[in-house]
Amino acid sequence: MTRAAFFLAGTAALTFATSAAAQPVDHSSMPGMTMATEPEKPAAKPESASPPRPKPAPMPEMDHGGMDMNPKDASCAPEHAAMGHCMPEAEPDASRADMPDMAAMNHGTAAPSDPDCPPEHAKMGHCTPKVPMPGMDGMSGASGTDLPPGDAAAPAPPSDWYADRIYPRAEMEHSRHAMMVENGAQKIAFISFNLAEYQARKGRDGYRWDGEAWYGGDINRLTVKSEGEGVFGEGIEGTETQLLYSRAVGPYFNAQAGIRQDLGPGPDRTYATIGFEGLAPYWFEVEGALFLSHKGGLHGRLEGYYDQRITQKLILQPMAELNLALQDVPEIGVGSGLSDVELGLRLRYEIVKEFAPYVGVEWARKLGDTARFARAAGDDAGSVSLVAGMRVWF
Image 1 (tube, rainbow, N blue to C red):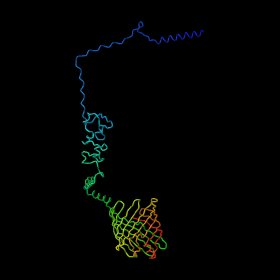
Image 2 (image 1 turned 90 degrees about the vertical axis):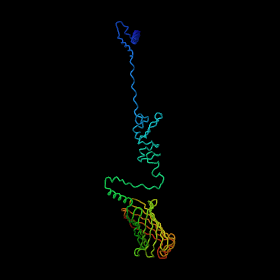
Image 3 (image 1 turned 45 degrees about the vertical axis):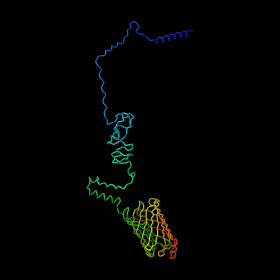
Image 4 (image 1 turned 180 degrees about the vertical axis):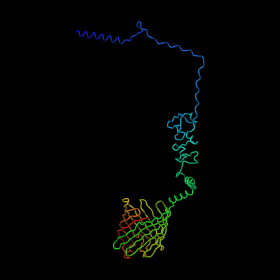
């Protein structure tokens, strides 16, 4: 009981002290306590009768050549617009309607309607505007192959060579002439033997060659072709030599015309020749010709081969040759129609590009009346040969 009374008395005293501390204390009302007061502000002076000072006049706007120093288009600075590198966006404000075009500041030309081709780029030939531009010497939007065809004379070649300012003109003319000869007018001699081989066949081993030589340039050439075959111990069975004028009729083909002379045990024949040779699509080397003999016989030939590279040096070459005749010529053992066919397959190894030995097999067959004439002469109409030889050129 006594402890509860003491607890209640202490709680009441603590509550009274807390409420008393929370009340504000006014020290000014306490006796002997004088607080300094804030001095009063002096009264405002009456306004003088003198007139007010005038405001400074606004500075006149400086003329920057029509450029807005604070353009609305932040991506196109004034100095870039002045050089024609960009075009500021036009403001809808009517007060800027008389502002000169930014592109017109570049050499005094009007702004093109093609934003992809500024005037300075068009004048340097870097691009072509879609519409004509003043000062472009009448240049239209078309150029190069877009221009309409015409028959105007070609422009004169340049004569103001810069090198002539440093070196003697005569020496430079000699150098330029040599360069032009080497890049189009150079004369070249070429000799090649596509076939030079030994043929092993049943009972009658023989040999064969097929070569070509020419001299000239890229357009005009003098060409000599030679081919023939023989049998060991019996001599040459026949030779064929062609002397042709060859002219390029495209990047891959030459047209040829000339004469052909055949020599051998039988009667000699001379032919007027017209034909072609070149590189067909898919890298087929092809050659064809028509031969008209001085006896009136008309013959034709078509041959070709393909180089299938197995490696950079090992090459498989299939080859085919077809011979035709318009009429029978018993004197030389040729019948009308498809007279004979030759098919060969040779594998060569290029020790160097100019020299490649090879081995292979060849099948030959005479057909029709040609086969009949061969049998009548005691020869076989067909044969199979194993061949070994070399392919050379220089």
